Image (tube, rainbow, N blue to C red):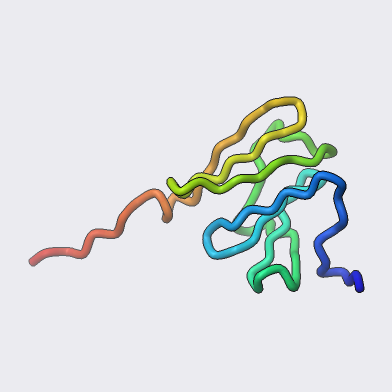
Length: 95
């Protein structure tokens, strides 16, 4: 049964696992599930699309082992992003 928190049905659905969340990009917005796909929400706080991103086409989303999130638009434009906190390894202070 569909609810307000269901992942919308799309013909070319693409979902990636990134930063312990499931992520999909649909109609120009990030949809994120933090509970293995049960509930989906538009996450405007942590995830946002770059300026110039298509607002109406479905996109392919892929996460790489290097912590990058790749988004391919239907026109062939490829975007790469990542959370800064995932790009750096924490180093403990040595006294």
